[in-house]
Amino acid sequence: MTNNALIKFDHVEKTFPKKNGVSQKVLNDVSLSINEGSIFGIIGYSGAGKSTLIRCVNGIEKPTRGNVFFQDQVINQLKAGELRDARQKIGMIFQQFNLMPSRTVFQNIYLPIKYQHQKKEEAAKRVDKLLDLVGLPDKANAFPSELSGGQQQRVAIARALIDNPKVLLCDEATSALDPQTTQDILDLLRRLNRELGITLIVVTHEMDVIEQICDDVAVLDHGQIVESGDVYSIFADPKDDLTKRFIDTTSRLDLSDEIIHSHLINLSGSQRLVKITYLNGKAMQPLISYISRTFEVDANIVVGDIKILQSKPIGGLAFVLDGKPEQIEHALSYLKDQDIRVEVLDYVKSD
Image (cartoon, rainbow, N blue to C red; front, side):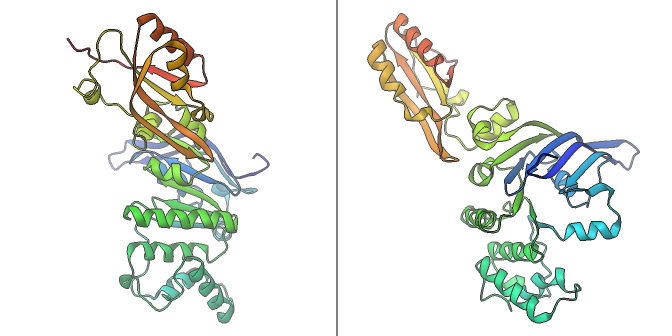
């Protein structure tokens, strides 16, 4: 393992037998390192193997091949007692909260440590402290049915933190929540990471979640990692088509064929439809005004989307270049020499 890696997947494979005797490989040669104190996102569509992957971290699933390291332990080689001890350092929250409906909020949070022979007074103080941490100081005696979805997830988070874990596994933890509640839970998770130093592994099918909270991301497709890296680099310059499709869900720069071929973009003569994506903070440079002045071309912006990601600007513009053909080509050549991605899009010219 690398010096600051808390978790490492080393050529992990997982195969499940099917009822008809045909096996199904859900993880295929997965290798990843997750640094201590980071927020690591794993994104993929349903059936990609995301949940199976993180269940290998706490030993709920064991790899068919390869190893999963947690600190200095190989999780899939631990004996039952050793695995129970390791799991105390690994919390987990789920999409459906998994609270016990017949127990109060206090009892749900207290349950994981009920049989650890802790003094009841100390345990009660711990529960109260966690309720305050997740913003539910007055809900100790409430039952899950009396809480909103967001409140139930906060209880589940408090329960997952009761043993002071080193890592929190979040399996589609916001998928059952409305947008505002999702934002509140993501803000809470980010605060817990910052204040407690807890490592988060966030499994999701929503790129917006990755964008808002994660430091690094791995894209999983049919059990394989197709792309991984820090979130800014992946958003700025995705390589895999699946990654690009995910990013398009969070960006207003995706010009569909319907728009390109509609009357909204009616090109004529030498006009060109251009899409540029800024990389490495280039959004702060006045490229459009520069090419307009230098090459005597007009740039009519069709759509733009620039935002801040990991304290750096990211995004781009789609625009129509108009002018003399040779000047347009000079402008395009200049743009392509910059540290940005330039695409001249297909279009249908007007008659």
